[in-house]
Image: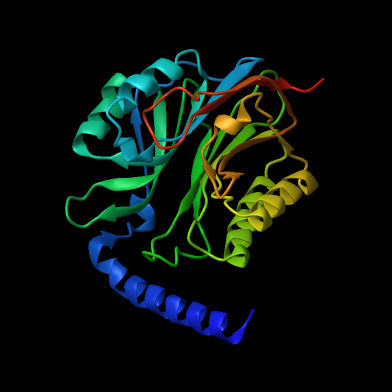
Length: 278
């Protein structure tokens, strides 16, 4: 990198740091005891069926007019729904609590001082979660200085085997590749603590070759297989790289699909049916 580019990069970084230093004036970070909440219908089942379906969607904080209609339509016949950029306005909290026929665990990244609305990740299911926990990313966004959380739920599988762990991630975005790597490593460290099968899905913000390749390599070394989508190019792309992914460990995929025609978010939802591998 030439001297002029180094100087320019330094100036831009200093400006971002100044913006970030003031950023905390518009949001609050909840205390550990206030990070998580559950809402919605009582879980109907004690354990997952032999074959079950998963939906993953960054919902853009529910800003799009067709968000509710789209979510209700594409979540039909799904067992687990993983939402990134879940948003808890008064209206949306009522929607998730009374109209969305799932039990949900919500992990809050931060809330807005102006109105108290919360944003984070949410995992919903027809099956009762055995445990639910979260981690806070080791770094914050450079722009905005906001944190991100990853949500981990475990569910009983058929038979007497170990539980399934489901990790729902919205990876830090405006960060260096090294900071992004640290977040990915943190999540895989938690997943390694679970002896059973696992699902890792969400918005990974893999908008560079370096970030995408590290994620895929780390997943492979950790025993995960990425779900391939016949229409995978319909996923949201940034700089030509897909942001949203699903990885499986100890499970085999079938009928994977990207809902390229829905308009309820700036991202497209993904679904897959899975079952234990033979």
